[in-house]
Length: 274
Figure 1 (cartoon, rainbow, N blue to C red):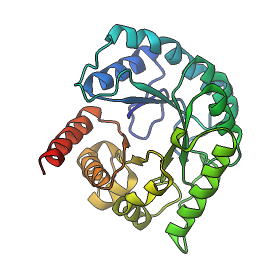
Figure 2 (figure 1 turned 30 degrees about the horizontal axis):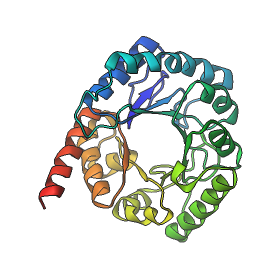
Figure 3 (figure 1 turned 180 degrees about the horizontal axis):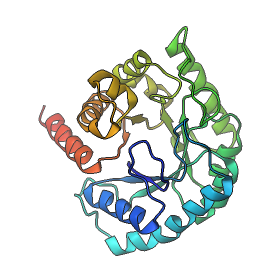
């Protein structure tokens, strides 16, 4: 899953409000092997002000309008190799129901929701439009720092969270197969929480949904390597991909698609030969 930030305050500094730039980024990522493009108009950074619903919608609409033309120009055959998912999926990274209601009629295979699903509205909108829904573990409101959070039993909290949220999504009309589960690395978690999740990512397969493992340039990678600059963390990202594949994770959300695609291809080749 390649990350395209339609904003000017991404933590990696790779976002843009120029739609020709973001469309070119998406095209490059598809040519490098992305199976999914994840577009987001608002940074999840907690030290940045939230944008309005109207602003978020207006940032997303031009990309959504141009997406079908981009795929038509790329043609019917995957540009990377015959293992690439084609046509690729489009994920929309947003959590506010008003935004989802405005953009889903224009397209979107997946809503990447970082809100921890506080109610059924986003699930109901996905069911209405035939889209899948990503449920991410966190606590509290998005755009608010939760660095103080600690868990008496992290695994018990994760178990309870996904049981409740999956049941809520199913009651809204989504099947378990339409859900993607995200353990929420760096969201309301400390270094050891994040490392424990990477070590035990196979825990999340019990619900029978695809698992997205967040790996790209994460704060926990910077903590382990002593790298405060997010753009320096790509080697650590590949290490987390390797750990995640070993534990059965199916989706990896990344900034550097070419490196990730090559990493996955070699890992698959080694696995087949083992």
